[in-house]
Structure formats: structure tokens, C-alpha cells
Image: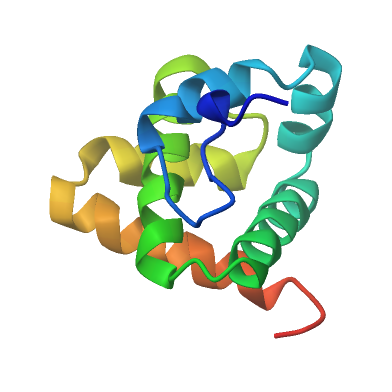
Amino acid sequence: MNEENHVIHKDGQVSTDKVDNAIEKIAPEEREQILQNFDAFKEYLGKRIAMGESIGLSEEQMAKIAEKVADYLAAREEPRNREEKLLQELWNVGKEDERHMLAHMLVRLAQSSTPNH
């Protein structure tokens, strides 16, 4: 598979500009399943965070990816539950530095939902 379309490369480089494209490649049914239930959303993020950790990504790198994902979701997806609605509202009123901190908190929240943390 061609690595130029990936967000995370084998060498640990991160291409945050590819996040939107990566999200759009998720089948609509799978995306709906992930977003429908907040626990499923946390579990999905937790698996992605664990994968990032396994290849040596720092929390900062993962937070930058989380920022791009949150930007995408806030702009293109309707919240499916109360938790997502709250996150969207916080995201929309937050300044850039506040959004960055919220992205760090989302990374930690996802980490806490995985068995190894």
C-alpha cells in the first residue's frame, strides 16, 4: 500500500494534512457505528492511540492528530449523543490553545479506556 496517503508513516512521521482524507475513507456504516455511541468512540480512539504509542508517537504528536480529527468532526458530523454535543460545543467556543489542550485531554481519555493504561 502506498504510504503517501497515510497519516502516520512507518518512520514515525505524521502528516496531519491527511487526516480528513483518512476519515473519509472509513465506510459510512463503520463511521456511524463509531460515532453513535460515546463508549464506542472512546474505544476506537483508544485503539488508535495504542497503535500510535506502539510505533513511538509522543502525546504531542497524537494530540495534533486529535486536533485535526476534532476539526473534521466539528465541521462535518452532527453529534450523535450528549457527550459528542458537549465536545463539539467546547471545541467551537475554544481558542486555538484551548482546543490543543482539549485534544491532549481526549488523548488521555482514550488512553484511560484501554486495558494497558
